[in-house]
Length: 179
Image 1 (cartoon, rainbow, N blue to C red):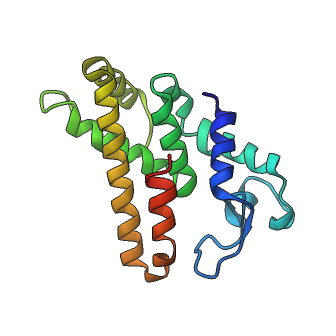
Image 2 (cartoon, rainbow, N blue to C red):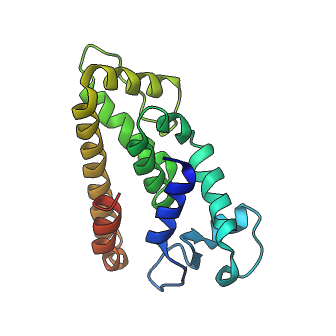
Image 3 (cartoon, rainbow, N blue to C red):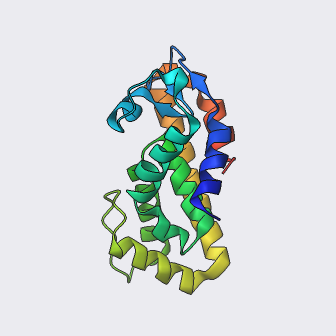
């Protein structure tokens, strides 16, 4: 798959303009918060943000900067999952989920990855080694462990911030089960 395909699928989930009073992100268009839009140089009204502007932000901030293109070369489904987590939570959260799962799955004899949320050569190497050792079933297990961590992440957000309980069902349906 291509990043364009992943972005289009993400935009379908995100929809258009929103300004929900319980959403900590405030105004959003295409899933891009006003803070992220401003940081990326968009100065217009959020309701008027063009789809192409959102796509450019997703491509740069949530795909290229966290280096998910390198994950895509190893396992496209994992890359799309980490892209979605990055867009909804932050890129570092998805990468931490990956690092944590790899540490548990690769065995005690292998050196542990530092769970820092940065996709570096050690994490990429560990993923390649894991894929070589465990194959397709191993990658299914890895994705399941990432989804489990994501589910718990959303549960804990809703427990910590009761206003987020408004969103927990949609997060579980569209983010945990949907990608």
